[in-house]
Image 1 (cartoon, rainbow, N blue to C red):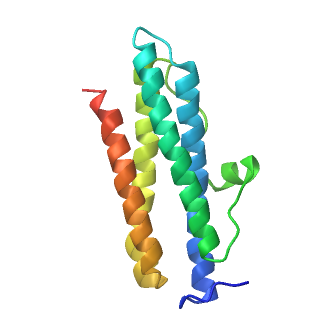
Image 2 (cartoon, rainbow, N blue to C red):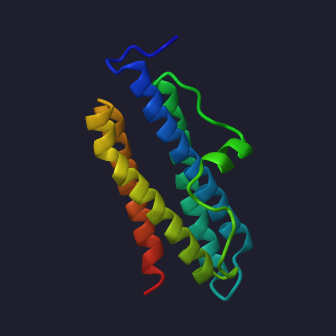
Length: 157
């Protein structure tokens, strides 16, 4: 059944398409954070192992939330690795070494890219597509990513 929530079907489709890209970005970032958790090396292994675990657990909740928002708009969330790789703005390739600072730099860049994507869509969702609810939703997500980025950035000082 289609969602009849005061937004045209075309606008719902447009928002769902952008949220699908966001979901793909969240999944790639989640996977890269899991990789950091599993493969970090160095004298700070234990503390960073736990730190990355906290981050990927938060990203797991975020992914679920984004997928559910897509469903609330009456569309299906992408759910295959192939679709995520086709939709993502991020790269799954790591360009940094397997030490904590390398992973932190890599993950920070990805969070910042997601923040920019979210910021670019806040007004667009509300004004162009008439979806204030999703605009508000992604504002909250942007704030979560800003906090996670701050935690990562703090390790680089």
